[in-house]
Length: 309
Image 1 (tube, rainbow, N blue to C red):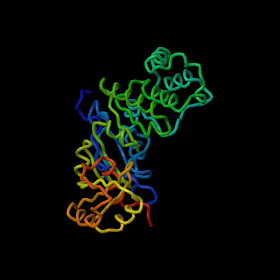
Image 2: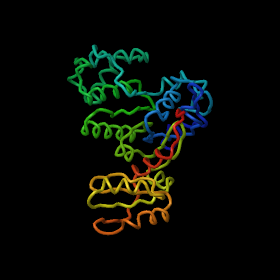
Image 3: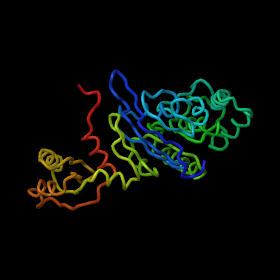
Image 4: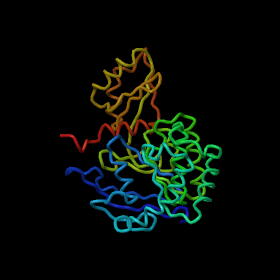
């Protein structure tokens, strides 16, 4: 598929458990060659949505296409063209890297299986480690093995569910450099993450909370949709100041960022009125552009838990 062409185009995707919608009429469009970030708190429906897209779960409602196939009726065709990397390491720890990859190649019935395994090992820097047991690998190397296995059948779309959870910063950076190299060659990604720095590496984002899609677009577009005004305040006794600010009407959040607080609201006039009594020495106040984390904290705080009684 050509860059810009829709790889994912679904509408109204819905899944119920125990009478509650864990994914509630979600629309999503992802273009070829795009790195699309899918964000939200734990239990927000991200994993369920990914599983519906790749045919592991059947949607209760919804329609559309994934890789040109009907997302409801053609799940088997979708499975063959998608790579899915789960949250937890899902390979056999008592098998070697090579044996794990060979198993995946057999599962996809690759004609040149041994060649595919050998090339996969070389392309992603696993040469020399192919006989090592998967259970002996560090978190970063397990992550690399999982990505290699996802790619062995040359998928057009990769669904990665919190792929960097539990790995060190260098491994995370190396992983994202690999993602961008693959995307530049035309591979498409839908990636769930909790890390704001990773979200900012994506071409576009969607934010889902308790099953509902609340915002989507580029980083700047998502921040704009939330519509926050944010002030930064520095000075002594910030934890106590934060408690006082959170108790005032017109302030939606007062969150520590390093040696300062970010104080935000979607009502600029009410916010200025609320902070006015505190705008004096020893505090230093300045208005700043709202960041992605400010926007996501705001979205989390206004979201309603669909499993709350």
